[in-house]
Image (cartoon, rainbow, N blue to C red; front, side, top):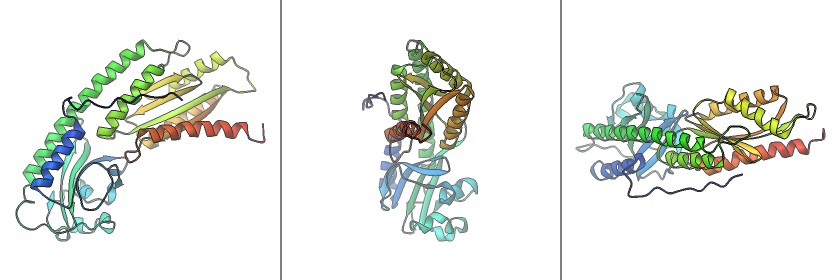
Length: 317
């Protein structure tokens, strides 16, 4: 398994989404105090805390809860009020399942939109106490801050396009001569790029590791195995991926692909490889905000190795 060097962002670079979110939360903490302020991301049916301000509930950064159980989903999908000083007075909010886990008696939220018009997340404030009186009525301010984060997110997406172009240029000079796939330098650069982006935005990302051997019933040269495996990957993998040959195995980085979709991609790849009379050993894991990318990378690599070990030690051999 290759070792990937991680380069920390320079604090002097222009503000990114995470930094902007932290500044927004600091402002809200001072001007609209609640028990809990957060910038959240909605993805894969869960609402994840990208950044936390006030945190009277002791919830962990990177933690999450089901989107369907939240008050925010009722605000977004049912047109509920963006400010509820007394949650019990709003029937759609009063019975939200999330209130069974934590006491929520006041609420404030505003959507953060992605560049394609889809919902990226929510600025969310909740309090264990009701919030009567002035202050919490300043909804235009919260909407303005959410709009500013939407603008910063647009800049992040433009930056991602530029970074992807740089990665493509690197890949042109770092091709594996046998398979035509990307080489280790491109893989390291792609993982590092996604590591930094994931820390800011938690875009859905998964990794697949694959080792391929020839079927004993159909002896094949090692080089031909690698070439046929690469051909299968080009046939099956979606466009926005990085597939690299890393010595004895292959690495696949799936960007903007849900965990369920990544499992489906892995299953399709296994079927395609078996149709080519190859024996694949595969590990797949999704990156999770609460754990960080390298836990998932280790999990996928260990899954692949476990499949190989199980096959080597099976009685059939």
